[in-house]
Length: 535
Image (tube, rainbow, N blue to C red; front, side, top):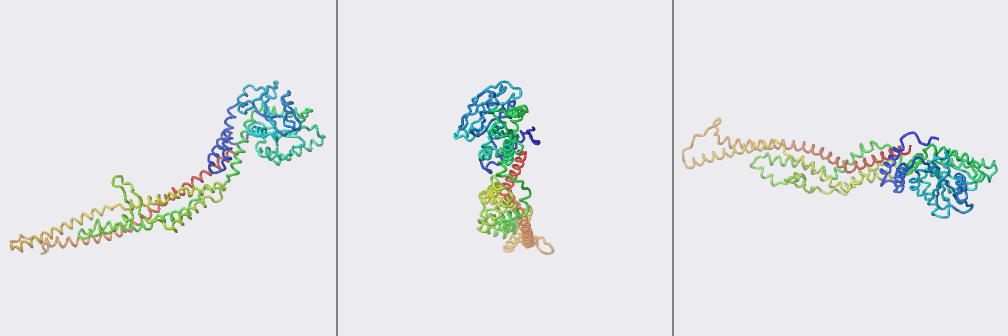
């Protein structure tokens, strides 16, 4: 019988299970995640021990006759036989060609070991006689539970009176539905039934097993007292031992069971790509921009540009008056940087977001979380919603810094300001020279001293040309500069608005969308790993 499934190797499936467990950490129930990790750890230990030996366990209820069956299979009176009371308190092992099985039995914590006469058909078998799974002693039941989780091959010994007992079906057989390839069910004590009743009991037992998800599991009728069915049971055990694959089949089933448990609490084939594009991200950026005071900053940038242009290019006679007016950006402490490092210093003085704006931000973040979580399993949907809000407390500072840095770039002075400012000073110098020249001429005339010859331009004296022309030129340049500053202010405000939207969008991406995307990617990786582990 083929025990291994087609598809990924056992190593690949174990790695996938570990990856799924790591990805599920903090999302799925801790006990389910821990169980998956334990399976992977246990598999690593089992593979490092003898794979030439197959550990099979006889498990059953009180009075099922498993100890008698153990004695018959080993050919020796190794187990004490009881009828109505548990007599097996600790598991014991019978070994056929047990050289090298010591570390394996040490790991299984089986102290009682018996060598069995050589049997080429059973070489490599390690047969365990377990305590009764329904023992009144808690320690017996715990020992059964421990070994049922780790042995390579499970042989369930049932009897005609209790083969339909819900305790064995609900507690052991049904949860082990994935282990059908490493399981054998024995109906013992068939000598107590008429031949026709044996067939009916076996048929009913197969029906119950099918209901447990164990359709196809070998079911044998035997009698430890008369020896009926024992040759078939020995042959079946010999076949499984000879294949040397029960250990791998057991581990494969354990991986699938652990993966099923993870899937039951947090899996689902849901497409997650493209969930954050379009309306929700734009609405988030718009809400954050309003809360960050972007419209106020854009208006201040335009006004500051015009204010600074007048200071830099205005008529030197009157520009000093402009310096007494507050700079709109400086008033908001936007673009205030350290002279030594050039880095932004402190926070801006932008007004705090209003209650309405805060509510709009909360709604936009919630909408992002809901859009991303739509259709996901409950635990992952909750994780996505948490991710959307994971950095909500940092948004205000991040937005303030983004606005300040972006506006600092918008506060850079155009080169033409310096050129026009130099022209204004040249014109002012010419005007001052004309005024000084006229003053000298006036003084000489007042003192009735001879006046030096004065050059003219179309009969207009040069001092007058310099004075009047300088004043008119200065005013004209100032007016033209104001028009250019107004146009530049509008252009800079539009550019700043675009840059601020991009900066706010980057904050939205970094502090809201990226955590959500990371969680969605984690979910996708989890489902991918889980799919591989379950194959």
